[in-house]
View (spheres, rainbow, N blue to C red):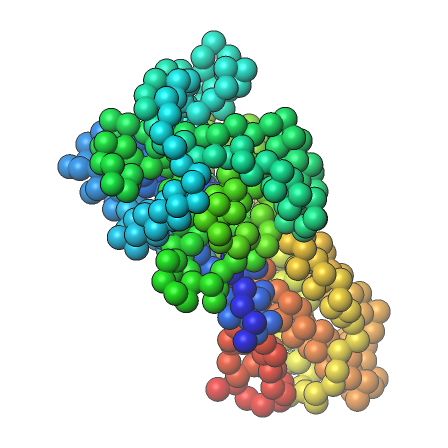
Length: 478
Ligand code: MSP
């Protein structure tokens, strides 16, 4: 069976999930479901990034008994959110888990043996918000522009990773593999960044008591990004001997803010450890809410579950996937959310299904002869799905739905009912066949809707495997 491995970033637990995090996770879920439907053996991993400095701060503020206890509470909140959103993840990685700590230790050993780790003195600025060392030119009055918070001056003995050593190899790899960084705009940004020159990076912090201890040196903890990236290997059982059966990842889906970590630091780490590189890193865009940046202090860091309370989970998926071309920046507008729900989901799709079912029941008592559909070229849909252009895939499905509505309007079944019952049966049979195809194509994108349609249109069972066999509509539902 072919394999497919897709990942989301592992999110920081200093706060609850907001709709921006859900966006990335929903996109990965679409891919996981799509490849399962095609018959692939899929591994879809998600998780939480616990070993950050900001976990320590948030735990102290929360009044939790311990950082560990805070971490567990928050990890459960994140996992429950994905469960409530119907995210079909296979692995939920916690970076405080023994399996991950083991993977990090082995990985560091491999990189050390390669001669890529050395002890040096780090002097510079660290932004806890970004969990990143900053160059002075990236700060204004010592503050990072994203978090508007004062960076810390750090002067300490740290372990360094020879990132600079991989400059040429990385550039060559990215140039030789155009599909590695997607979309192309991100690829160009990353190439330009590398070409400005890579410096070795500090990959440990001293004097911290939260984090993974540096192997054989408990005075240092592993820098949180160095630890976090390795979660993708933890998910496949690294360093166990079978990890390469699932590795490399087919797609790391990440936001554009963290593309650099995934396209520079991570591949260099893998090259050093002698582990294959992921096949693709897709850096999606960021969206604002009603024109404003998502931020807790502005009060618009909306809980994704809240957004599903009125119209359901698929309404949120549909809006996020259709409204913001995947890869580009966009805006979440409450007004548009509602109007898109009414026009596309309720009117176009809802109407097509409900009037068809009503007519079958009215004119044929629920029994129709099986015929094949009229519409539906799936080639463009599959091309869009494979390229993560979810908005285009939805567009293809909506062409079929709109075609169904136009076909019904043109054939006027309510007239045929009086004049030509045989023709009416044929017309409705075709519509049903088209709507079954719609249900199949929507399965990865709008799983709840697809399942409901499949049931209503007369399928015996709903499953996620390839070739959902829609039985004849005149067989009674079980
Ligand atoms: N812990 C790191 C990732 C480590 S992966 C090895 C991290 N975590 S995070 O909690 O800050 O999550 C960042 C991710 O959340 C972004 O990359 C992006 O996927 C998502 N988003 C956060 N805000 C978003 C928007 N406003 N819009 C779209 N995506 C957003 O970085």
